[in-house]
Length: 322
View: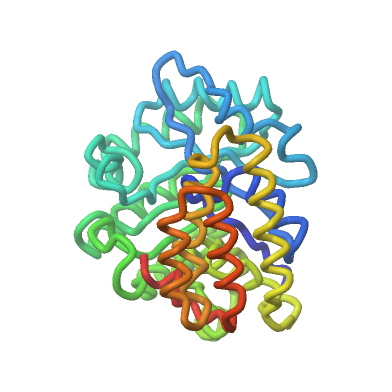
């Protein structure tokens, strides 16, 4: 069986700097999904968004733009920009984001609560675009019964791949994924079905694949951010390598210094990473607090050095905090 490994989009983290560094140091992903692009009327890509989707900044990577929206006309317009101006042949629809600011507008996982509108949206999008369109979805908003009518909708369309995060909107990232609902989708759909959710350790992956041995597509999110070497362990059997992690960190840190202005902006990005990575170290609390409080590069670098003096035995602790 040929497995496909995907990097989930995470706002503020899995941007083009992170993706390029990851590809250089770790077991490569088959696809990298961009943090979502918001579909809006008369959309024009910002300089930041252009960097995310441009072939020049993603050379050597298969990058799939993810779009967030609930208006078919706006979605189609943005998809055509990505196709015609940046050469993208595949796009991904975000139906999984549980953020309150997103779902309150009926977007992301919030769109799942309006099945008739979602059905009409998908009908317009799939009939209007000669592109491959994959979907990342949750299994409903408030009730497991939501999944039944969502499956009725999804199987009507030529979805390139359906990546299922088997949680409800109300679950956010708490509790265990609802694997029985994933099973229902895997058994019912004819399109390729991928899995996303709580793959924090090699053991998590092993347990999941024992239950679902026919699953070929895996999307890694919080687990790969907490431990970038996770796929090295899963696919190549390599032990966690703290020196490689340090080199990976240093590459990202130096790249941010090149493209961002001011210490504050660089440190803000690095602190977001450490929210996930720091708990994978022993005795991390004090160095992590120093990282969080650092205002200057010198303070930050001293705190990072202190953290790397600790033992690094990744166990998913950082990923499981969210």
